[in-house]
Length: 257
Image (tube, rainbow, N blue to C red):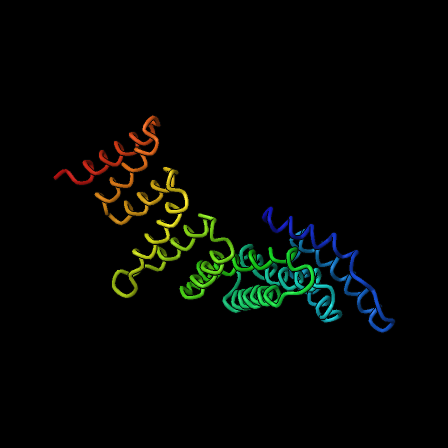
C-alpha cells in the first residue's frame, strides 16, 4: 500500500468516531455502518481486499446519506481495493474485467461526490486528486484508452497547474500513444515539456528533460541546443559539459558519417 493511501486510510479511521448517531430508527443502521467501516479499514490495511470491498459496500447500504467523511472514502477504497486486486494478482480475463470495471466505477463516483461539494469539502478534496491519479494510470496501463488517460491527466493539471510533474505525466501519455501515421502526438508531448521550463526558466533540469525527450526521437540538433541552454544556466557546474560531451560521443559512435 502506498504512503499516500496509508495516510488517507488513517484519516478515515480517525473520523469514524465523529459520525453522529441521530434518530432512533437510524441509530442502529449508523452503528452497524460504523462497525462495517472499521472492519473494512482493517481489511484494507491487511490487504484483504475482497473483505474490504464487501464491508465498504455494507457501509453504503446501511448509511448511504451519512457523514461525507465516511461515505466518500468508502467509495474511494472500494475502487482502490478492486484496483489493487488487479495489481497484485494474476486474473482470468473475466475477473480482470470485473475488478477493473469496479475500480473505474468507484473512482469516478468518488470524483462526482467531491464535485458535488458539501461539508468538510477542504478535507475531502484529496480524494478527487487520488482518484484521478488512479484513473489516469488505469486508462494508460490497463485499458490502453488514450482519450480517458488524457482526460484525467488534464484534470490533474487543472487541480495543480503549478506542479511540473503533472505536465510530464501528460507528456508521457502522448509519448505512449504516439503513432506517427495514425495519431502523431510528439509535438503535444514537447508542448507539455515546455510548460515546466516556462514555470522555472532558471532550472537547468527542465531543459535537460526537454533534451532527453528530443533525443529519444532522433532530434539531435535540438537536443544539443537544449543541453547548451542548460549548461549556460549554470556554467560552473561540470555536469552540463559532461552531458554535452556524452551526447556528442554517442552521436559519433552511432553515426560515423
